[in-house]
Image 1 (tube, rainbow, N blue to C red):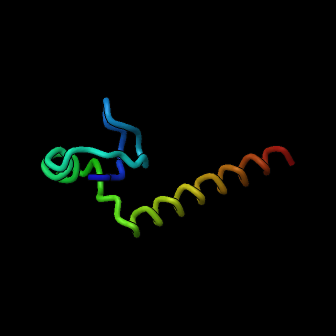
Image 2: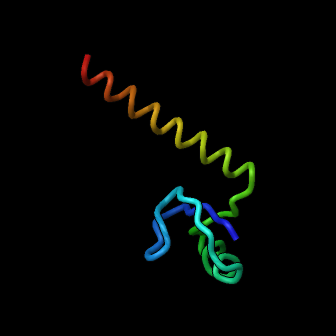
Length: 67
């Protein structure tokens, strides 16, 4: 089962990382605790867009500091 982490999980991965876990661990712990969501096609697209916007925003902020 592939999941997208919504927060850092010790010994597993960091926020916004796609990880592969056993079905029971994902269904019974990570998803109910709100620590992860299913890595569906649409969720992956949203993740990619959010990462692009985060990088773009930090680039603009750093560019403004230089000018």
